[in-house]
Length: 271
Image (cartoon, rainbow, N blue to C red; front, side, top):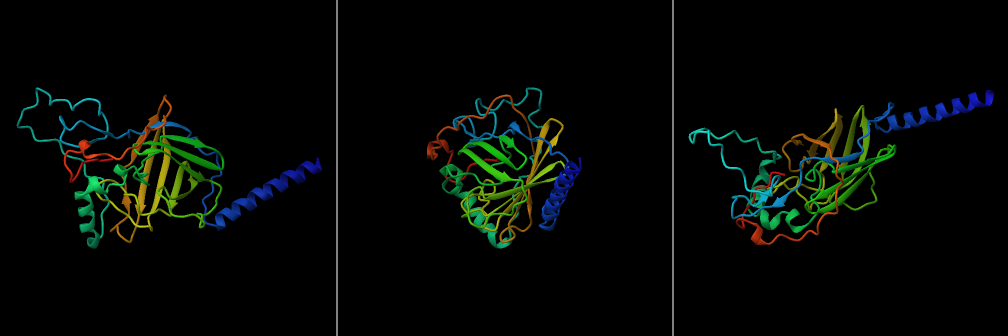
């Protein structure tokens, strides 16, 4: 009996010591059971090239199998157009705005995604599938450029300093209550934050927050790059629902030729 008590006390001491180490290192500690984010998630993404014979845009975000529906017959021709949503775009420092505009004009020649490069973070958006364990969480993606993955440790480790900068960066995660926080750094400069010339530097840091909202998954992301951004860019939140189907192997990505593009200067792609 005494031996069992000593064992329990030792285990409690080790647990408390581990928590103290994490706290001293500035890593938030999840004491309660973490919510299970595992599963396949339909986040509304999926980009496809559309037929320019019936549309004035070159890339479609959703509903690309058929042309857009005609206006309702009972809507007067003089009705004012519906208000457009505010573009979800970062704000750049004045000295970099000309560069953004130039890249936007030449998007079909400069956009890394059209050249089959990984989209980067946060452009890749919420994960299509999540595999969760006690010590790490894995994000899987079925993207227009291919299949991608991110392995995110949850054991309190710091960012690695022995790896090269990459398209999807180096991520670590922790639990803030019921919210998963993922911090990613060490990006290369070969991706855009979003479409239309939204470039970044190697100083980019992205913080994602994922939480369950009932049966839905809420994804938020904020991009920090004070070298070029006038302010942190908080993306419009996105919501995903559980999908019954599995993600599939992405088709081979081929660089898009000009037959898919309405003109050679710009295409609208509000990813």
